[in-house]
Amino acid sequence: MITEHKSPQEQALIFNKIREDLLRPVQSISLSYKLWVAFLVTLIIAAAYGYFLQLNNGLAVTAMRDYVSWGMYIATFVFFVATSLVGMLISAIVGLLGKKWIIPVSRIAEMVALSFVMMAGIIIVVDMGRPDRLLNVFLHGRFSSPIFWDITVVTVYVLISTLLLFLPLLPDLGIMRNHLKKDIPKWQWTIYNLLSLGWVGTPNQYKILHSAIRVLLVLVIPVAFAIHTVTSWLSALTLRPGWDSTIFGPYYISGAFVAGTGAVLVAMYFVRRGYKLQEYITDESFNMMGKLLVLVSLIYLYFNLNEFLVPAYKMKTYDAIHIKTLFTGEYAFMFWATQIGGLILPLILSIFKPFRKPLPMMLIGVAVVLGAWFKRFIIVIPTMVHAHLPIQNVPHEFHVYHPTGIEITITIGVIAISVLIFTILVKLFPVVPIWETAHEKGVEIEKNL
Image (cartoon, rainbow, N blue to C red; front, side, top):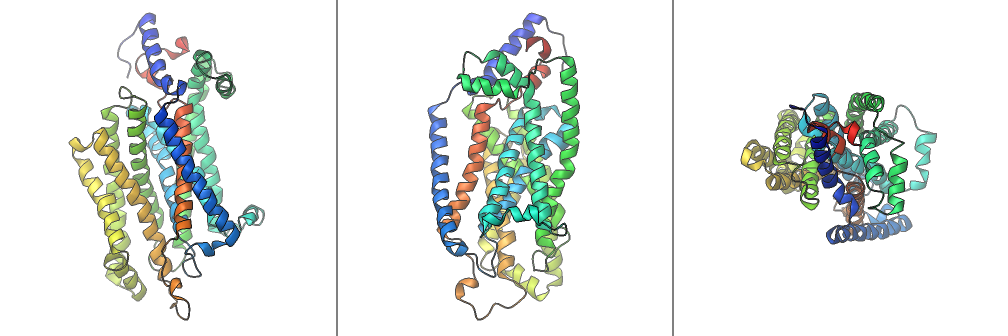
């Protein structure tokens, strides 16, 4: 909140410092950044080779068979969709409540959201045995099909996420166009010049910008809820044990908030450390994100209890087999490690303020993200293994599912693409909004553009 009036000279000094601090990462590329990009590209190349083998030899190179027809790919799809909801959580829900602490966090959240939701569509194509038939979903899709609606809401969410990232960037793009012409390559300045759309910072432009952003923030909420609700319907509309539940919609959404919050915490830490932005992404930012993690984790814990308490109480035959497999059987270690290490411990630790510091919150975020992926694996695979119909007169590999090396390589590569997209975005654009940060420090940004 602006508490005092500053002279034009003071405002100019403050603005110049903010601009220099937040644009410094855009103007140079460090060795560590190049090595990180090279590492990600290596993973992507390995995945591309694996996908080439899959295209040549078919899905037989994976561990998916007639019974377990969904594997790591679909688990990763659900994970991508889940993590991408954090853009809506931070920018829309928290932002519309008027919480100013999200200013240095919101753009990171939007970049994470866009990076992950873009890959949600790619991993679906990877899962297809005949990707050349993808167009048929649009040409011959049925309105009664959840898959048709899933693709529709994912596409719409990508569009809105792109706009929510781009529109608040307009004032910063205008600043970059005006101040970086001599400090960056000409091609890069040309991109900023084109993307700025002639922004000059007039009061009328800001008025239109604020109105447009507010409309998008309101619009993205039902779309974001729809994307994960429809994804949950892909499972819940079947009668298989573990999926036959009416709580899957809110259960998926609450889990998505947890996964996304964890991903943003990890991104915040490395962006802050790598770009030396401690003055902007402060300890208080991690403190507030830790409190948010506690809130969404409590909601998710409630739905986790509901997921198992009711079927465990009724103990129908196939539900009993499914639950025993998770609690004490083949998937018990993964299940309890996910529940305890990926949800309960992060929740308990985040309650205490000493743990709501940058490094502890980053480590908690890593645990949450890993737990979120393995949780999606547990949601998908055991249910596929324990279908209602007895599995008989088929080879042994039809009874189990253990991902092949090709599946693992391709999955890691697709995740690497999403991380690479985020890595490029934080290098090309200021991760903390210049104009909003300056405004909060009492600078009349229109006079300093």
